Image (cartoon, rainbow, N blue to C red; front, side, top):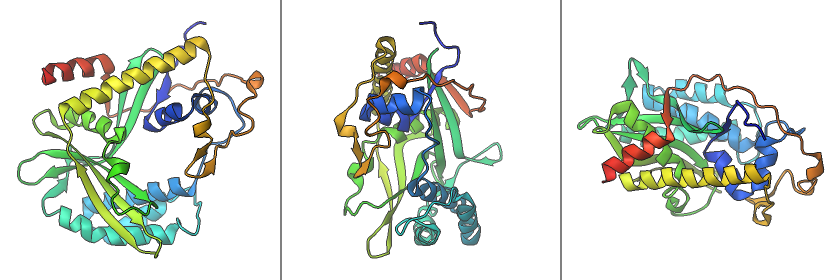
Length: 297
């Protein structure tokens, strides 16, 4: 099989799909299907909330934050639990928490531009690359150190949300990009998750969760990424993407490919489109691993 000149774009979510079920990843990412992009109320709600809260961290203008969140609510897919009204409620509950954080932090500004929605790309091999988007970066007002933050919404009814975020691989990848933004000395290894928890009594509990990380945590993330890459390459070389029964349900929702994923005789490779996005930061995986090995040693 001749190599494709256009590499495959990976991300935190696509690697989650691969580790959930290789066949699901293949159908979503590698094959031509009739399925349009999967939209959901969760995605629309989370995107709008993230845009609105990032605006408030920057401007402290409640009306502008709600307006921008409303504009970002697209596609307008709503449910009883997640809708525009509930998104506005989540933002309003978040503003006092942000005000408290801003006593010690401010949004980082780079070359006159606020550090939000920063994109990065890690070139893995000629066939694969990894991308991520940082919601916003906060700078400590007194010592200048910076922390990456990710805005989240959840309907989980847990008293302690830490298990859902503390060991998530998403934020660690973001913190690696932070080195290139502010330099090693000012890049704090901690990761922040600004979480709006939607409670059953129509209330919202807002929790800023910060987890300390180390250089070793980062190195382990890079090594894990390399391990996922090896499995991807093996699956491609064997043209074997097994079905995992544990992936047929996710959050009590049936996989959209359930019942037809066994029809491999109809598989048609998807035509890859070139990635024309101009990423804010571009890295090479081998360079990142070598740099972190040097620093850990």
